[in-house]
Length: 135
Image (cartoon, rainbow, N blue to C red; front, top):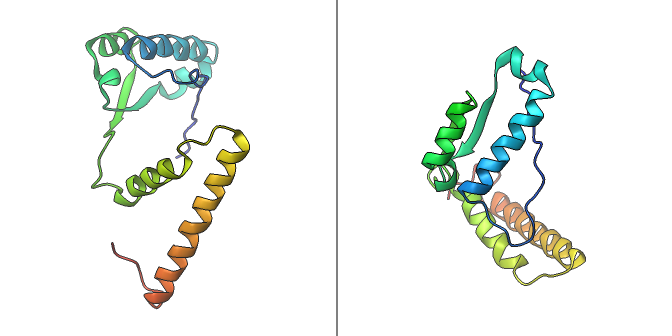
């Protein structure tokens, strides 16, 4: 089954965070853009996917979603039992990119991080004779 994904939002300004008010405005923006594409809405309806963070589960947000007559496909925001390696990966990456101000330095830090991870992964596979790696 093929699904269409639609992301009409722009990234937030530097150092601005999502709160219930911002998310409420984003829901309005998404709804407005979707109304311009009725084929997306009419064919299968709209399902919003977001985690269970407080800004997504606030009374204000739930009421807005109800008024827009949208369905929600939730998933946990911090479920370390689902993908423990990802949480370690991003925590490590966050550490490596901290303090990088220019785009060039940021890209270099990410590339270096990726190369280090790849090399350590290859070493682990080699050490394990090509078998699965269990953490």
